[in-house]
Image (cartoon, rainbow, N blue to C red; front, side):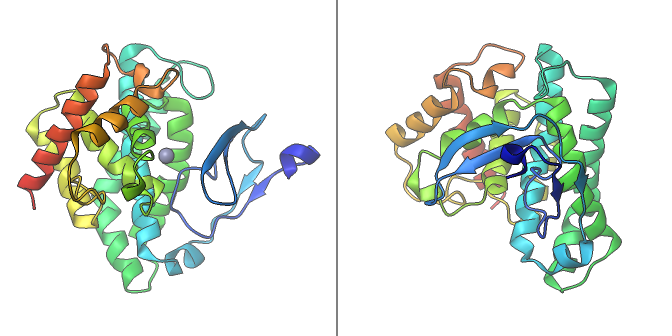
Amino acid sequence: MAYYENIPVVIVPTIASTDAPCSALSVIYTDEGVFSEYLMLPKNPEVVIVDTEIVAKAPARLLVAGIGDALATYFEAEACLKSNACNMAGGKITKAAMALASLCYETLLEDGLKAKLAVESGVCTTAVENIIEANTYLSGIGFESGGLAAAHAIHNGFTVLEQCHHLYHGEKVAFGTIVQLVLENRTMEEIEEVITLCLNLQLPITLEDMGIIEIKEEEIKSVAKATCLEGETIYNMPFEINEDMVYAAILSADAIGRLYK
Ligand SMILES: [Zn+2]
């Protein structure tokens, strides 16, 4: 409304389930909840006010989904830095952007599980406040300044499967992050760090967790195809990408995830 009326925007989120509030990007959905369009706002909101007592009373699954969304921030920013890609604002990746993204990831590792458990107990602790800051601010400004890469494109790919429609944005992004790590052939140590966090928080680490009980080759190929559509952020990765690589990385990530079950 503020965009069309050309008036200032003040956002007061009551959940911390995505990195949207601080960003200048508004995602428009149809009444049925299907993605319709991206609306780029001329600038970021004037004010974002988060009452952590209110956010702490929201369902824990929403906070955890926000952690899943924030999990991608550092890895996508690092990919954009390596490939010299542009960030969401059209500029290059600065040291400040990398510092925000890296602090975001460190905060999730340090406080993610503590925050989930606190919210499940109905209380707001320092860990909850730190996670709200990471999910809302560090990830929001982090992804705008650091750019998006494979994890979010893989998320978009999975939206073509109806089995995944019950998942929140951040839950799919978490699995997309693991797939990106496999694409990059990261060390087992790095992959395990992310998987352990997801496992502790009950974020998806396998295709079964994503709602895909029976793995059909043509379905996973359709996900890979949608991930690699022209203009997707996966082309911000620092190496050449094709559908076969994404298909292989999804199945490989699933196999690694199953090891930890
Ligand atoms: Zn996101």
